[in-house]
Image (tube, rainbow, N blue to C red):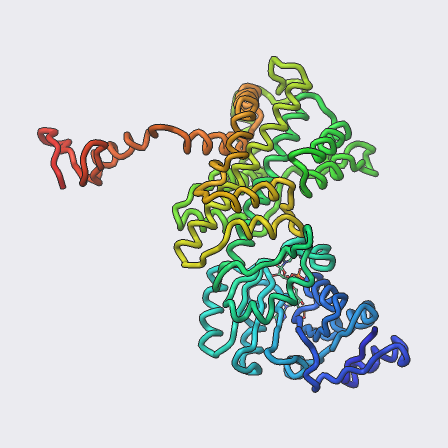
Length: 507
Ligand code: NAP
């Protein structure tokens, strides 16, 4: 079914389509079930996905040319109500109005919200589907609540293809808003075993927080894969052969979208050089900020996410050519080159060691991310259900992976403080840890940087340690700052009179 907006300007578009082909939809009639503001790649694809699922979709973009393009190119995919301005966009929506804002995060989102609010009525729902910081989402939710409006910060993952074909959607906001909005979002989300990859995450900023952590895990997952690549390259395996290894890995425990992508990238030949494309790409990784946000949130909440943090810093290290050049010229050590990263074991064993290390580190990244969500949920009173988070990450999003089915099952069956204590995970790590240690040791010996593998192993060992050297740190803090310490054999706080007679005082 095609559609036609009712404004003179857009009738021209309809005429282009052919008048017989289109169905007139009056923007002044409140017929649209849902509206999308922002017709750049994400908003357009989300609107198309909604229309393809039978929803009448109102669409609006600041520059009308983009709205027109959607009608011309995709009008036949469903029923679009193309609005020339926000007032008619709002008027075209059935109550309660459900408006998904998919514009540039930050100032763009605030600008659209400010223009929308005076046009809306009590009970209407504004959804921010962009990559907003959860603190902004909390602020906006509070501000719109004061107007009697619902504000839903919805994390949407899967990039532009996901938005069109089925993303993973992580909505926050009130339960009342979800009751009105959820069925629509669930209808366009990715589906696994009949279950949509969309669920209410919790109030105010919960959805965007979960999406932010998703991205933090994504950074870690990508860094670990890159480290595995580096080690295998050091063992003399060329990119094309390595693509085959990753394809094989993708048939087992490591089965995931990012492993699939890795094999595709590694097997790509460069038309200019005839070599592997990866060898022609500058080794400086970019970032848009959600990884840093994850680490910042973890620092503020005091949650250890060292493997995720190392992944963010690894991108930063790669992107400082002057720092790297200065250090390369100055520093001694083994030169990581082909053939240098193999342990005494044969190549097949080394490849399997790397595979097990990758799985172990990946588990740690999930454990750290899910623990961060758990602590944030407790801090903000969100009551996020971790099993549900794992469930809606199984498809549609960038970190989709076979492992998530297992994680989901473990959280369904057990009350877990950390994923690492889940029976099947614990057993898995018991089996992989020897490989993990061998690989991190071999990398250190060969001078191959593996910040993600090393940090994840340090986390594993930190958490399982009977005693940590933090006792010494407490002693040092008491020495120079009288910060006091607690004793293992008594309650209360103590201070040693370090500069006096060194007697211990109860304080
Ligand atoms: P974008 O490039 O981030 O933003 C462009 C859109 O924002 C255009 O529709 C633009 O309108 C509109 N816009 C910017 N400032 C505005 C303002 N002050 N008032 C009204 N409209 C304004 O678009 P995108 O890539 O589709 O991403 C949309 C959101 O989804 C972002 O928050 C992004 O972070 C998030 N996201 C993107 C991806 C991805 O793969 N691209 C994946 C996940 C999430 P005009 O056409 O008039 O300039």
